[in-house]
Each structure stands twice: as C-alpha cells, then as structure tokens.
Image 1 (tube, rainbow, N blue to C red):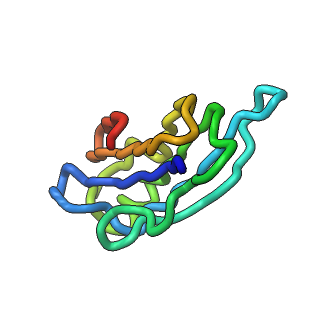
Image 2: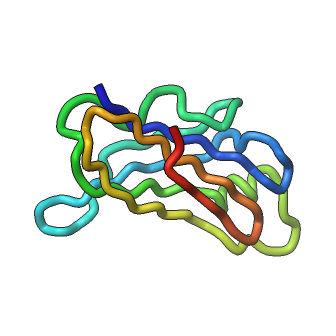
Length: 116
C-alpha cells in the first residue's frame, strides 16, 4: 500500500524543524486545488502519520509548509522573514509506492527532492 510522508530540516540550525504547520492540497477535476489534510511536524521534524495512504492516491498534489510562522515562533531570523509558505507541487502516478517529500529550509531559501 502506498503512502505520502514528509519531514522538515532547518539547515540554519542543523536540526529538525519542529511544529511546522503543513497543509495537503489535491487538484480536482476543475483544475482547482482543494485542501484535503493538515498536520504539524513532531520533535523529529516529521509528521507522525502519513499525509496520505491507501488506494486512490493518484493525482496532482501540493504540500504547503508554513515556514514563516516557524521562523517567527522560534525567532530564528531577527530582521525579516523572506519565506512565508513553501508550496511543493508533485504528481503521484503509482499508488502502491512510498512518496516522501522532504523539505530543507533556511531563512533565505529551500530545497526538496523525492526521498525514499
């Protein structure tokens, strides 16, 4: 059975990003994104449960990471907050695979990849 997971690592501290709000959106037949789930990262920077799992996973999704709130809450940048929300859009084509979408953040940028 397939699943979708994520984690967030703060490169500026070298530690997992705790308590980052995450929303999962799916593109519908009208080509609009609709929110279908939400979560927060735990002490290890991971979501405790998969964002999505089971049958009918095929589709186009967007994960929105609320990193601006994370930086303000943790006072990790003093003068300004460049990033507010990091949206990552991707497609799931094989519903029996594990899709892992990690986010590596820093105050001025981010990176992602398809993990395992």
